[in-house]
Length: 529
Image 1 (spheres, rainbow, N blue to C red):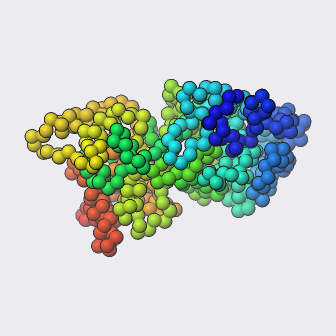
Image 2 (image 1 turned 90 degrees about the horizontal axis):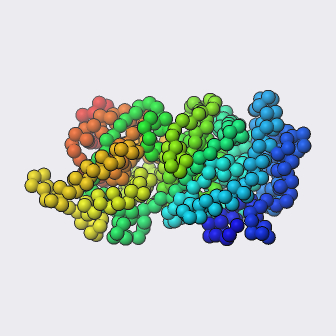
């Protein structure tokens, strides 16, 4: 393999080495172990969780991985495969699935070789997508399967991941916490993962998944100022119309009927507690769409001006419940169509909220942070020319913050063109009809204000020129009047700047102790108590 900056950046985090022929390969002892496992338990003796954990330790030693696994990981593997899994399922797992996974791992070097050959011309190769580095990695589902098999066997080096602000990637903590503090929800998280491996062993999917780090530049570039990090003046002066707002009091984001950008209420470390004890919105999504976990290998934590968009992750599991009531409920057959890159039309954007923001969430600094975070995630930067046209006509930031006057009567020719362009954009985008499907971002364990967060996401979706926002309230009592409030706002014909200024006024009063009710009741005092 030819040397490349992409490979050099990721190589310290892979369990492979470069041989004398400049090709990726496994150390010989690992090859021996994997070949033995590929022949079945009669040959390898890997026929239970306890022996599997020993085999994992031996392979790690052959890779000279000095960092110890989580202390209880071997006990967790034994607990799941030898006690929690039925005898028949366990025998099938070790007789059929483990050999296939071993074979898949043996092909990891060649899969990576092909990957780099295919991606060389496009710059989508596997690499560390570091902070403030916008870019995309495009992986085949087969390569992702091999990478996740490395996670299952805990073969990734971990010694320097923390220095790069990379999240956990091996599965040792997932199994260790199953033993250390058993819960049904943790067991069912593992069942989702095992379902994924069983499915790809039965039939390997042939599509691809893309992982993109998106950012709003902290530097001002006049020719692409809409991609610069906006400050208060940007939002105050925006004349972009508010997009339609749909409220769903029941249902789930991942089941949204129309193609949309589905929001992952993320931790700044992608995946959050997915491979630990976490079991809320982000962690559940990573369990039912396990290919998302692959991004945790090469995507460091997000800064305030960054978001991560993942397109194509297939769903493999069905489930019920949430948090402690989460339960795996069987196979899920994903019927979403695919695009020209072979990606399923499932678009997920990870945006992280602040934990326990309390009163500071009403300060201007943090309102800007939240709105920009959502705006960064919602913006489709591939449609540069259309955005440039709209933003230039608005002159929101292209001329150092100046804005066009809006005339109710006798509008200038420039203003007429602006409105015509906005209309043509809306019509063009509605053909794709990729809006936003979201919900109570950062409002559960993180303690955000759900009423304020709905408005923030609406502002961001509208400014990003999305054709709609579909909001799932998950039955939250604080949002029972959401449909009434959003309908009233739309009737006022407010634009983004209007609604932003109203939100700032409310937040200022909240900080001064002059508003002791939620935003909705403050805006519409006639709402039923």
